[in-house]
Structure formats: C-alpha cells, structure tokens
Length: 422
Image (cartoon, rainbow, N blue to C red; front, side, top):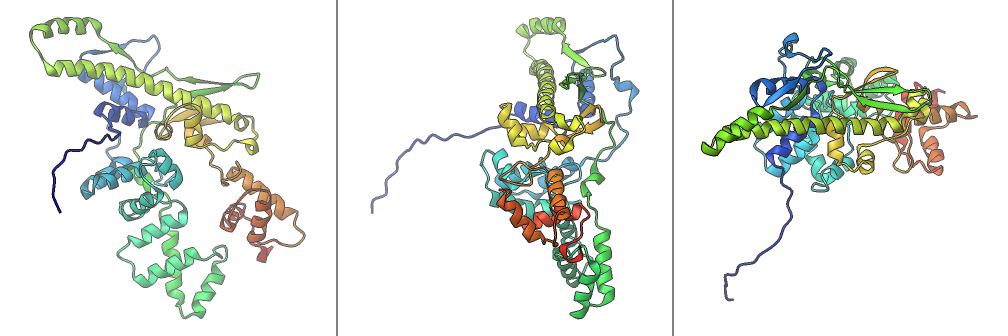
C-alpha cells in the first residue's frame, strides 16, 4: 500500500466568544445593585467616563458600604470549584451552562431539553445529565443542581461521608416510597423486614435536617432594588418603565478624549487607547442591558396581566424559549436577564422570574396552580375515590399527557390525602 502526503482544506463553522462579548454577557446577569456598584467603580478608575449630575438624588457610592458582606455568591463559588477540576473544555462549557441555569437556592430551573436548546444543540441531553450528576452534584454546598426536593436530599446524603451505607440506602428507600404521606405505614413495613426503630428514626431525622435551599447560604446580603416599575392604568393596560431614579447616567468625556487623541498621534499609548475603548463599551453595554431588561419585562407583564387583575387562574404559562422566540432573542440571554432582576408592581416588589410559570404538560399550557385546581375539582366531584392513576387517565383523555407521579405531586400540594384515605 502506497503512503502519500496530501493537503486538504476544510471549511468549518465555529462560534467564538470574544472577551468583549463575555463581559457583556456577565453584565446582563448583574442585579441593579451590583451594576450600580460596577459603574461607580469604573467612574473612579476610568478618567474618560463622567457622571451626569441629576437634580434628584442619585445612588451615591459614598453613602453605601459596598463591603457589607464579604461572602462570595453561589455562582462564583461553583465556578471557582469548576476551575479547580481541570476537566476538558467541552465538559467545562456544559458545567458553566448548567451553573447559569441555577437559581439562588441552587435549584436547576431549566429542563434538560431547554438547556439543550439554549446551547444551540451543541450538547445533547445525555451529556448534560452526565455533567450534572458527575460534576455539579459533587460541588459544595451539597445539593445544588437539584431538580426536585427529593433529589436535593439524596445528593446531600450521597455526599455525606459520615453516614453508613446502611443509613444511606434506608434514606433513599424512604424517599422513593410512594406512600410518603403516611410515614407510620412506611416505618411498619421496614420494621417487619427487620429494620430497627432507632435506625428508621435516625433516617427520618436526617431527612428533616437536610437543607432544601443549599444555595442560599452563598447569596450576598445586597440591597434589593427594582429595575422596572409596573402601573396598571384605568383602562387595564400595563405600563412598564425602567426606573432611572438613583441610577447613575454616564457619558464619555469628549473634551478629554479629544485632547488625548491629539497626543496619541505623536506618542502611542496602548493603555490609554484601551481606557477609551473600555469607557465606550461600558456606556453602550449598560444602555443595552437596561433596554433588554425593559423589553423582557414588558413582554412578560403583557402576558401576565391576569395576575395583576387578581385572577391567578388565567396566568399564562411562559418559558425562556417562548420569550426568546417572540422577541427575537437567544434563550440564554433571557435566562441571564431574569437573574436577580426585580419589578415594582401593585402587588409589591417581586423577582421578575416569579412571573414565569412553566407548563406541567408538554401538550397543553397548564400552570401548576391550574392543575391543582383541576385535580381538586375532580376529587370534589368524585362518587368513589379515584386513584392518582385514574385521575391521570381521565386527564390524558382530555389531552393533558400527564404521568401518575405528576398527579400525585400536585394532589399532595393541595393537601389532599390519597384515595385510600378519602
């Protein structure tokens, strides 16, 4: 067989994130408080930035102690642990994507299918699940990356080296039991199989002492300030505006830039050129960030007007992907925008993310609250107690496509006992 050397050219598309784009992405995730802090620090550090004084009192960095809390937040903590692992770039990119989909409590708020879409299908569900369980679930605080409270407890148990395998197995068995609403029945079953009363009580105590919001231990104690304000006018139309009060307005110091540029013609100074470009970038990025927050906020509020009319049953199911498709934005951008953003409403100050309601059905738009009401209505009208499986079959005939465990989950949230005890 002859061996020949040849040169082949091959075109390949590849998405590259520039340092500037990375900084812009990071800026999107900042809360109003963190953004104001960053702007104030940049004004001090960059001589080409100047703040426009307002007649009203604006947020003054001198009036706040920005070192009120020295703890790092959850995201910074997880990224720090990720950097120490030295895993390959693909696995690292998946882990970062998952971390960006965690909320303040450490819960994974996106479905694996949604994370797959957010990645533009660079990664499939199996890869994402693998990194979630083999990397994220090993991080501290134990429990982060959970998708439900059972999994949150299970992750903490699996990572607790002080527990015996016997107790771990017992805890898992209790959590996986379908009769969780009757602990005594579960206990009797284990005792009949030879388990001691002491071991069972120890397992229950471990479950009770588990942290169901492990990420909150790493949240900064920051001031909460709303980015947006909503007003429901007399014609029941929603007006959403960005709150410019107390937000520093910055601009480029054109006089100083002109003088420096004249000098730069004779003497090149890369550091000064970088400072000018950084000032321009910050002004553009902050304005873009605020416009995007308002755009997303307006869209969400227009969909959830029923909530503000005291009619929560008509609240619309809404996902990051739906918003992204309708306002021509990437789902990951929407996900970042929703982090740590608050809106001032007639019902009080609330996280913008609380107006997002995922559908519990893949075939129909049904919010958790709506499903709980439907289940309650079925049970109230039943002549003979129906099992969760029968309720699921009844709803699936209407096109809901729900699993029995979903019915069980929302029946329990309604504080309705199982058919055996009704």
